[in-house]
Amino acid sequence: MKTRPNQEIRDTLKLYGLTQWDLCKALGIGETTLYRRLRDELPEDQKQEYMNAIKKLASIN
Image 1 (cartoon, rainbow, N blue to C red):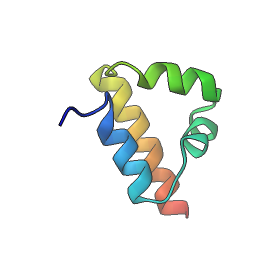
Image 2: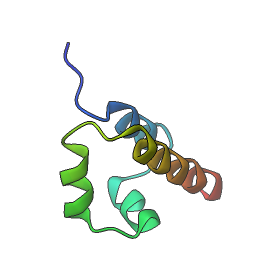
Image 3: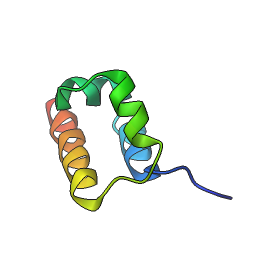
Image 4: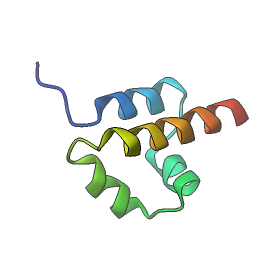
């Protein structure tokens, strides 16, 4: 089965019960921007930034 680009980010959000909107707020970007960026695999540094934001949100919740 083919996985979607940035599946790790999507799975981690789901694991912690967070939405993409939560991630948008944490990163200070709009929903449309996030959806557009997640269409294609992110560069590794940007992916790490997103994962760090998710982990920070998860520790708050």
